Image 1 (cartoon, rainbow, N blue to C red):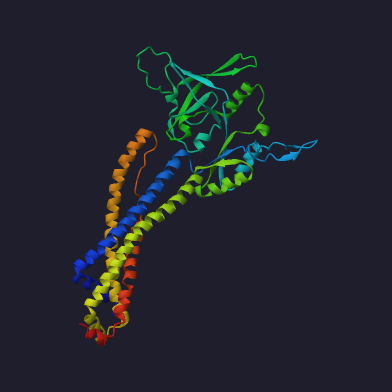
Image 2 (cartoon, rainbow, N blue to C red; image 1 turned 45 degrees about the horizontal axis):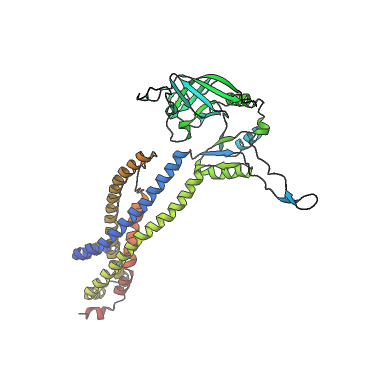
Length: 442
């Protein structure tokens, strides 16, 4: 008997009892749909969580800070008895030599030091006033980080600034008349800002320094820190900080407060972050959160899949029951098949084929039902989450249930396997029937 004959006989036998086969397959449909929807829901939640972290910071970037916690205070004996504290912990600063060491690590594509303007500054534009943090960076850093420009250019030069798209919301009109409507935020692109920086002497006297800076570009919205920053060249910010402190800044002794390291591939980020930490610095990367999210949602998906698997287990019991009843009803037919030359393997193949066919049909129906239910949940979930995001001000989720291509294939194959395993005992029982006893069965 050829495999084609086995398939044909199995389908014919299922067709003779359409109602029973349909009702048995319904259990597989429900179980498979539950697996598809629940695992897809876990995958969708994982993608949304990872996307939110991705918007918080570029996943191929590592933020490096000086390590202010290196070393420990140890209690040591003091002169004349008693206890005392040892020397304070040493500091690991980010110097120019540090930048060279980090840049030399395999996989590192860029090292970008930053400094922050230490003085509070008042920014004026026409009738508007505002405040903002000014960050000093290399002239080409913004372009090399892959940021897009909403307007102008992102290359920095002396006397220019590049601002985030939300900086304009920090401006207000301080001299409004009572009842007068506040004007909309100003369009700062290409405008010249008056920046007033203040410092105080030991006697409390205020000294001001006024700068006029042209807005050379506006960074397109990133939903991150870049939206609220004002960027100047690192050289100018260093000079302003030296004016504020009244002394020269020695980077080999004081270092940089913050460095952004870019990595060639996202798979290398955690390893390179560990290498930088081993050099004595503090590191942070959103990729570490993504790894934790993936681990959490892997457990989540296993739990969800297990819940759906319980439904398939119930369906498997139904298949086993159906096939056992079929053997009792077709005992004489089995004896006749054996009498005309069918082997145990042929009989077993027919019944396994029927059980696998029920699992296959149920799996296909379950995938179709699960996919449809997933689309409905996506529509409902996206509408609800979009409203929540609008109220709370965070990025809306793009999808609730994510069904990758491998999930339907896996679900159909798993349902077919469940059907085959469920029919294994009935098929063995049918194959081992004695032909004479089977023909005499009433």
